Amino acid sequence: TLPKFRRLIEGLLKPAAQRAAQQQVSGPVLIICGDFTSIKAEAPAHAVRSVQARFAELATLLSSPEFDINNTTPLLAHLTIIFVPGPRDLVCGPNRLLPRDKLPDSILQPFFDKIQRRCPQSLVIASTTPCRLQTPFGNEIIIHRQDTLKKLRRLSARLLPSHFIGNKSTSARESPTGVEQDQNHHFDNPGPHLAKTIIDQAHLAPFSLSLAPIYWEYDHALRLYPSPNALILADDSAPRFNTKYNDVVVANPGSFARDAAFLVLNPYDCSLQPSVIPS
Image (cartoon, rainbow, N blue to C red; front, side):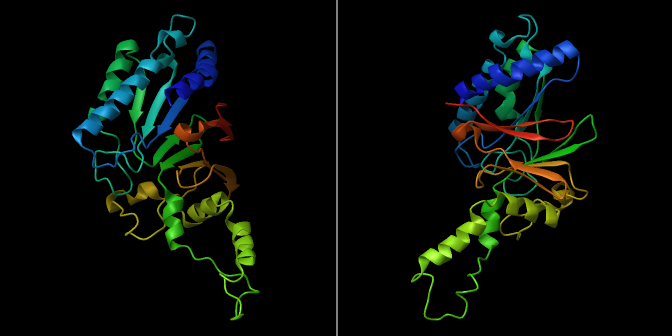
């Protein structure tokens, strides 16, 4: 993953930070969503040390002098970094409850230490999920890291095509072609269906409490009324998609670790550009 990050810094973050420095405006914001470990949240001590070491390696890369702007100013002086925890990450609060708390400072401390030594004025934020951002142009952006589609599929029901209903002599097993073609026609791209469900329900967890217990005191953080301008559903169980529903831009960036996929968002109009680092 670090070689991919290096190419992302060289090709996108450093040029964006250089333009921000020249124009004296806010620099780019790098939002990194979990999972930050392949081990479950109830991690033993040696697993926590492994995650700390990975964060330290990332901090070393970001603070490298080779990415300095004009060979004088650290990249970190014009870059804001936000960490959003994933479902498998250890967080400060209860692991299963939504909304989920931020990553513990103890895990991020090696990252903070290296960044602060290189650039004391750098801004690093350990966020909750969902994470809400307000742009200088009045747009609201919500980032939510959760495998929502996986949970919704447990509650979904697929209806047989109308020409199969009532035909007792023909079963799905006996006629797999017709059934599969009809199902694939409707479910080969679940992204727009996921976006419609979430926006229509105006809630980021529209399923039973057995699938996602909710911390009721903070249930308002999961609500989507009024609707945001952009909703980023970082969902590892869903394919990459970029759609618009009821004037809300909804997208899933995909997996950076697996596919080197990410999103570039314009804060002015919340337009999205799905991107991939070529291999």
